[in-house]
Structure formats: structure tokens, C-alpha cells
Length: 409
Length: 114
Ligand SMILES: Cc1ncc(COP(=O)(O)O)c(C=O)c1O
Image (cartoon, rainbow over all chains, first blue to last red; front, side, top):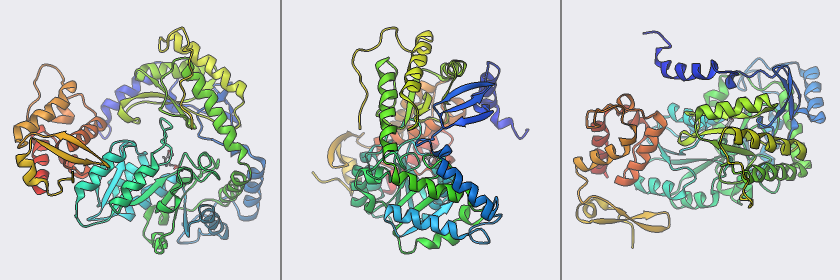
């Protein structure tokens, strides 16, 4: 048996995708022009699928900070945080993030994926119980494979489903750790966090919230769903990423636990990989200052979300359950999703396509992510294009709904 | 009505079991004895939409191989069965289950251990 034989099914499905036109999984950005535009296949495209929620990838102050850091400290650290890779700036960044959350401790990782993978798999071990939302991100699922703890899934965004699983544990020994996300990455829906926290308190469970998509977007000061729902103090661990709103790369975990720092010498994804380069640390520190200084970016983002979500809903598209910086558009099946995606590309708009097994409940989606610096004209144009394609493909009917059905926050 | 935490004896006698459901108590219909036949029947009911060809689904059916169900749908089915039979099946146990019989035995084992 060949090494690739067990992927035969996937290979076949992938061949179907590749032989029929542009491959959504091998798109090349020939030149990125701004947070909302790039050259793809020799043409200027509108980008609506980049997780770049505040558009900070081209923020002049963040770019300058990165350039200065390269001149001062070089291009890379060439070592891990526990060897030669901890610079003063890494430590300052950790202090600034801890301060931002009002938590005592922060660890910075080289990616958010590694933060989830390492922290979750290390916090619980043999005899412990890990409870995860069914729609958790891949990094959380992968952490489950690395821990000796017993892992149980509960129904997506369903506190009573979590409650029955915690109840069934009865008085079994071992810690309980519950993993939630602020905003889910495929459909843009948020967790009913307060209700979840009540359940966790009742059953004495620790809570870790991944705010990857909600940092900047939610909360009075952009700290995420924990802030928006007033439960910052009840969340024992908050994980996040620098690769979305902060426009760079990297991950973090904050906590008030007095023994938190032991993770620095136990979490393998922290210990055995090189630390973030100085340029990234510098741009992230500056991006965090921008997030604090410019709350108007959050308002712009949600205004844009409303424009896109309500506009598409009015045309009859089936969307995720609520407004979110990710707008997931449901399509009937995989090939329709790929065809729709290609038609969008032909019309000059790039979005993500998400198909099983990467999606919850086997749904096929166009995954759009909104940026604070999208102009209303860009989004109106996108709605027009999607409406036209949707009608051509028979995904929506020719007559728009009269009533706007969008949820609101 | 309080949740039957010491459910074993209740389960054997009650036609209906009140299961604590967050803060709302909801009534969950459970078979009086949840026999092996009941469990297998319930599993087969969940698997019916994934039947491939004419071969009927039974105890010896290899779930991931003989049917058109993918791994995510298997995990979702497990979540439904967990609630039907009021047990939790850890993911590492699920990974070791291949046939309908094995799944039924795991559920019965876990129920017996409660
Ligand atoms: C929910 C969630 N957690 C974690 C990550 C990982 O983030 P990073 O890009 O920093 O590895 C992502 C991004 O893909 C995500 O969507």
C-alpha cells in the first residue's frame, strides 16, 4: 500500500475540484495592494476573505515599527523562547497584553494554532476531563489528540448540552476544562458565554475562551466576547491570535493563575519552536496601541458587517445565525460552492470557500470576512455581484425579500 | 423535581426519566431497560440515511467503512446517542469503535458503570 492510498477518497474529490477550473486551495496573491485589494491571475480583485478585520496590515505606524525593529534587531531570533529567543520586546509585548486584559500573566506563542495546541493539551492530563464545543477550531481538536485527558464534545453553542455532560461526570475525580470560542470562524456566530459560565461555575469547571476572531471586534475596548458579556474575571484562560485583527502572526494566552508561568517549561509548542521575529513583535505592539486608540475601527467594522449581512439577507441568501465579522453564506452543496466561488473570482471578488470536512454539519459555505476599511461602495458592489451569480445558479430566487431579516448586535 | 443522580435504580423502573437539563428539567423518554436490542435499534435508526446499497445495517456493520457516513457525522451521531442513553463516550473510546455491535457494547458498558 502506498503512503497516499489512504487519502484516495480525498484525492478523488480534490481532483474533481482541480480539473474543473481555478483551484480555491491554491490561489496565489500575485501582489497585495492594500487590506482590501490584490492582484490575482493578473487582475485587481476585491478581497473579502482575509480575516483582516481592522485592515491593520497596511497601517503606516505598524509598518514603520516593524521596519525599525528589523534595522535594530535583525530579521529573526533564530531560537526558542527558552533559549536565545526571548528579547526585551517579547516580554514587553506579554506585559502589554496582560495589562490590556487586566490579567496577571501572558505567554506569547509563534502562532495562535500553537497557543491552543500547547496550552490545552498541557493544562489537562491523565484523569482530567476536557469538554469542547462540537464546532471547535482544528487547533483545539488537535490539542485533544495530544492530551491524555478524556475528551467529550458538546453541541455547538448549547449550554444545556455542556451541563448534561458535566453532570454525567458526577463526582469522578479530575479537573474539568471547557473550551469555547468568542466568535466561530465559519459562520461568525458567538457563544452564549454568560450561560456557559453559569454552567461551568455550577460544576466547578475551568474555562478557556479562544478570542481569535473577536479580539478588537467585540467588547467596549475590543477585548472580545469575555468583555462584551462581562465575564472577563470568570474566564480562567483567554487565548487569541495576532494573525487577524492585529494584522501579523502569533498567538497568546492570558491568565490570573499564580502558577501560570510553569507552562513556559511544559508547553512543547512554546519551547521547541523559534520565537516571533522582532519585526512582528514590534508591529503587534503598535497594532494593539491602534486598537486601543481607535475604537472607531470597531464601529466601522460592525457598520460594514450590517451592510453586507443585511444586504445579502434581503436578497434571500441563507446566512450564519447572527451578524459577525465573518459572514458565512450557505450553499446547497460542495460543487455549487466551488462554482459560486469561481464565478465570484471571475467577477473580481475573492472570498473563502469552505466545504466538508472543514465545516460543521457538512455544510458548504462561501466564507466572507469583513474589514473595517471596506468602503460601502465595495460592499454594495459585492452584494450586486453575489445576487447576480446567486440568481444564475438558482441559489436565490429572482425577487428580493422586502423585509430585512438580519439579526443585530 | 431533583435530578436522579443515582439514576441506576430509577432507570430500571421508570418509564420516563427526568433528566436535569441546564436549569430546566425536561422529560426524556428512555427505554425501561435499554436492552442491547434497543441500543442497536437506536444506532441503526441514526445510521439509516447512510446506508450504501441494499445490504441492511446490523450489528456487524463497520460504521466508517460499510456506510457513506464521514468521521464528523459519526461524532455528531455519538453526541445524539450520548443524550438518548444519558452516557458520555470519550473521543478516545470512539476512535476504537468500528462496528455497530462495539458501539452498542460501549454504551451498555458505560451505562452499567454509572
Ligand atoms: C478559532 C481559531 N483559533 C485559532 C486560530 C489559529 O490562529 P493562527 O492563525 O494564529 O495560528 C484560528 C485561525 O485560523 C482560529 O480561527
